[in-house]
Length: 166
Image (cartoon, rainbow, N blue to C red; front, side, top):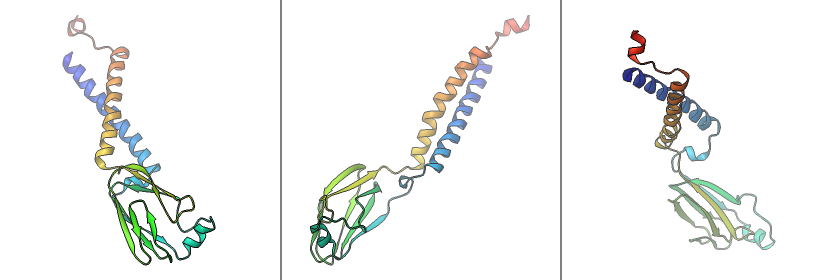
């Protein structure tokens, strides 16, 4: 009886994990985002004439209002405008560039001299690694398999060896 229970339990745990793999990987593939990649280097160029547009209250279409990054990414801001600019802790004189390493996952709102709102949003997400995906599979699969095992005892009870022998 114990051996049969353990076999059933292990088979149903494996079934739960298999179902979790299918669901988790299907979701990862079809809802893929930038967080499924490793850290990269991004360059943001402040084009010439940006300060004139900002003075008029016009946004520069070449500069996005918000950007999404993965922890570990580096943002390099290159100033091609005719005036010095600032982005949070970065000071970017005319004709130079400055870089910001985004090491922590968080939503940042930096003061910014090249946006009409004077605010620049950076969304830094944790990267989705193989370990993260495995954790998701096990976190869903093991409880699902245990639920299958418990319900299997209700639907197909294991008979005692003595009762079977009679």
